[in-house]
Length: 196
Image (cartoon, rainbow, N blue to C red):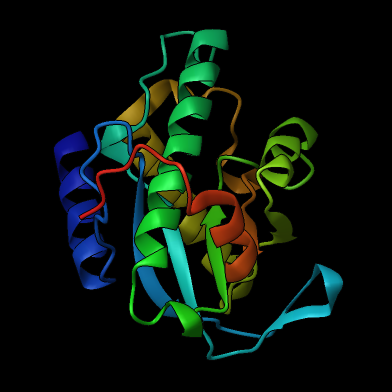
């Protein structure tokens, strides 16, 4: 079953044009060009309008640190933190060199790793510069169910202990947003990158 889920994941990544931008072994992110599905208002009255260009990032499931049988521990959290910051540096340097960088309004992601109301996980993401918004799906609760199911399949296929304490129907997702200029200011310099 894990083989089938991983094969499905590869097909979906190809179909949605998610790509690898860096070959550094500690990079745990992939990227995807997209358009904002709706208006997004961020701090300082910064607005991303529906249809504007956005760079989305995704966790690279095969490269995430493996959890022990008891789930996340301090060593796992420190490794994940290190790789996440390194990956943001790689992404920032890569984005800064893209010809369309001036058109990119924001860098964004949707994740189930941090649930709505998770203050500890949310604090780290805010320190990284992201604004955390409730995830919005055009399909409502029906769409939420299928996205939660797919996310659970991926967690089980790639890092099963990460499912500990999660309930399929109550698993929430959040959106992470940062204006491009702020992202580049924070992450486009000084990374030990090997971008593609």
